[in-house]
Amino acid sequence: MRRLLAVLLLVVGPLLYLVRRRATPHERVHLYYDDGSMVTLEPSAPQAERLLALARAAL
Amino acid sequence: MDAASALADLTEISTQVEAAVLLDEAGAVLAAAPDDSLRSERLARTAVDLLAAARERSESSGRTLTQLEAALREGSVFVARDDGRSIVAVTGASPTSGLVFYDLRACLRTLAEAEKKPHKKPRVRRPKDEPHA
Image (cartoon, rainbow over all chains, first blue to last red):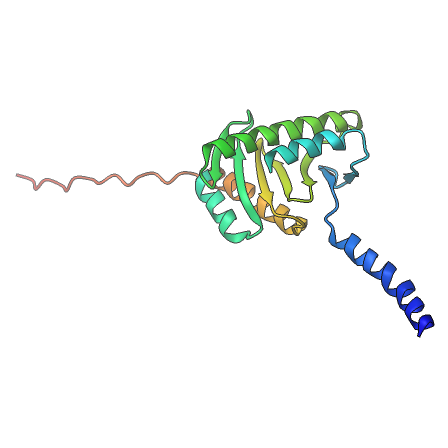
């Protein structure tokens, strides 16, 4: 019984963590250019913070 | 089709778009949906600032920015540019970005096409020929 509980905790725990993490919307900025390229700025990127702050003000 | 009708079509078609504003080249509001002047002015200012900030980033690369999405936990802000005009839209959290951009571009394209179409000349009624005396 204990083994079964331990296995459940080991399998279900990380699974739940991953599901919850994926469900949380991720903050980022996508920039699209005329040549078809796209750049994604993660919140840690130097200019992302400013762009995200501007967008936050609009929401 | 005028700017207000194009925006009304957009908000009817795209259920994800909560609010949208069309801007001219100078950043002035051409039309807004819903028609809330305070909010539309704020959105217009945001679009201008976002485009300026994003342009600063891409100046060195020589590429031209055509559209951007700022995704936040509470929602997303989209900006698309075409032919001098810009459109900014606000959606809820986790929107289908591709679809939103498609609808925004379709709106800008509709307006551009409507502008290019030659205006129909109003029909001039000719007075009936007077019977010869």
